[in-house]
Length: 221
Image 1 (cartoon, rainbow, N blue to C red):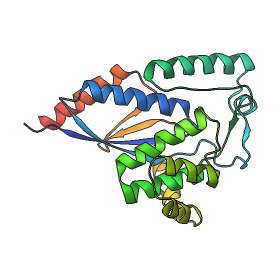
Image 2: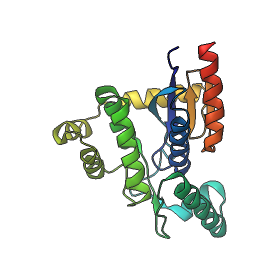
Image 3: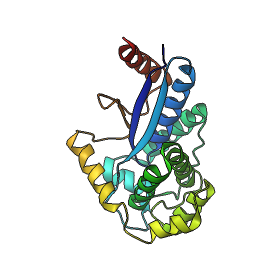
Image 4: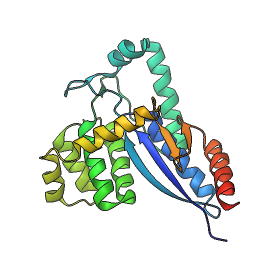
């Protein structure tokens, strides 16, 4: 009997800490299920802050304005995220002066990589962008930053520069975001499985194991 191949599309933003945690938990689940399932993982664009200025906004102020979070709330949440990330194998490096940024240019680059280089390279770039933001506090809407991050995962500098200097894939990103809205996706991460099921949030590893095992069983029945 062949191993079921599950399609997993992840609606995500590169400045979303739960997206980094959720993906780390998914990886752990797939490692647990390595003899039972295979997965094709790709990424869909979701902008948490599509209207934010290029220079971004101080993270604490942003959370207070958007969610009503107090300084104590933000500190406790960051501590929890840092601890969960450490357990999942992802390092968060929060700081008092950290800023939140827009991400449209990052999504445009991810869309290009997914189409021209495949899902594995797209995932490598996504992981590198998580690290650039959460560990080095770099702006994922800055074309210079994107050029450097893309080159760090082996993408050809001239190709990256040509894409970033154009408006290529801008319409594709907007269309994919609009499609997610029509599907009712309103938060990230959202893991869309076989275009039939959805798992939302940075769920624990065992939630992914249980869900993927059940879906694989249905595929094999």
